[in-house]
Length: 279
Image 1 (cartoon, rainbow, N blue to C red):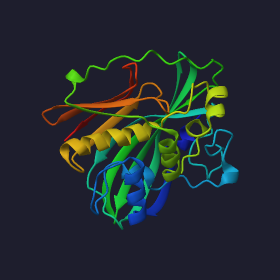
Image 2: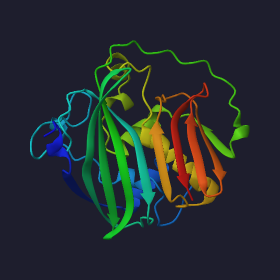
Image 3: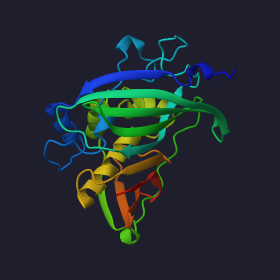
């Protein structure tokens, strides 16, 4: 029996409700120009948020992990946690006032070695139902890493981005207020998003880190601005490098038939989040 076999198949069920107030707060957070009673895609990331009490949080702001039978996530000892990627299937839009149920299942746990040391990958499968009907299927990959002792790397020199290879783009600067609001609306207490001394001195970043799902929400909003609300059927993103508060973020997209290629680029033109989807 493997070290993590007891966690494979473990489930967590949460309930929520998409209120008009929550819908408006999400739209306001990402500066969406959407209207109406049907929520934009990415709304599921602000539903069924973490429920751990403040006393249960660890030093990084994430819930402490334990080998208790009541614990959903496995007790991985590596202290640094990152949401590395997701694959999402949008089956039906979520209307305002919908009663939400999310069933989360630990799908796999794998240990690997990388350039930064030992890594543990945890895949979580989510099914989100709205008023009893399946609306979204998602498979998230979380990665746990060893403590970082490296000094923060300096920012690369900005370059003039060639937008000619992209069909559409939008540039914005994710400031501290945006990061704070997204942390609040997702009930995300990871300190790398709001505590600069912790992010720099403890985790080795050069500043506050932009949430991966925030960047992905902005990419889905970019697609909505171009093709209309809830136009994307499938969407997958992968975090490649961190983006930082107060640095320009270039959101770009290209369409070939029904296939979409999306990305978020930092000021040096490097990809921080790569994404693809279909209409």
